[in-house]
Length: 356
Image 1 (cartoon, one colour):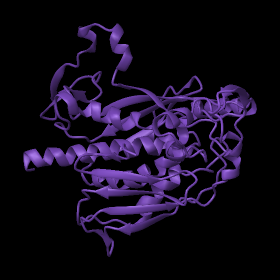
Image 2 (cartoon, rainbow, N blue to C red; image 1 turned 180 degrees about the vertical axis):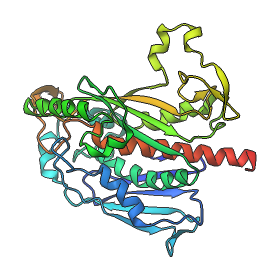
Image 3 (cartoon, rainbow, N blue to C red; image 1 turned 60 degrees about the horizontal axis):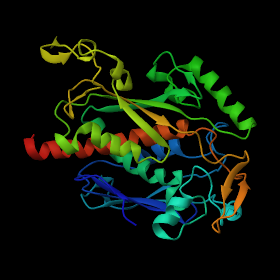
């Protein structure tokens, strides 16, 4: 199975299935002499893990990380860094009813079409559980970025049609939906609970802001920074679209409105607005990188739906089990991790050509 690795100089490979013994990740190209401890990884995994609140899946995984290699006396050695996260709360019996049919919105049919075989237990590699590996690797990338003064924030901008009107980054971890607007968070929670009561789910929009990113990251033409970020974020299963800066609103603007005028701030060249979202010509400008992703409603719902069996017979399906009624809250650390992995990779590439 190809497609399990991401990155060029800072490269990760994830492994494991939702209902297998464990999930894991190997980081190749890891920098040596970085102080690293299990709690650096665990604090990020705790943000992503299931069972956090009433608006997430009740599957109760501890997601305890085990560091297998690449670390000696609390310092990275430069050898491949490997993490293992054991699955301890999987209930494969919940999926026996779906063994011979295709669940709407899932990758059941496409995996059969590609490989001729699929792991029906929770979706196997296509499960959102795979993102635990990404978050473990992303925790390392975040630490490297913080050493460079780069910080990433992601939050629920909209859930179920409820939009946040203010952005207060200090409250993101103080509400279960990880919104940056506490008042909107209450309405978002209500919207999620309404969907749960109707055996349904809701989607939303996640916004991310990168602060402190230097100018010059990203490569022209095919490896533009926005293209690499799009690759990273669209690789998350539930993401259906992405926009940077003014995004799709740019289509209704004039050039005179959309262009960001340049000026001097604190003796440095700086843009006076940020419709570009911190990236011009595929290269970071030094302004905040701002983007938004569209997150689909969770595919696994208990409401009856039409489908067909593997023998091509029409049938109905109601998906039981333990599932998130909205994916946005637990996706926040995944988004941050994929952004961090992309930026570290780009930083290393920039250093390789600038000798700085």
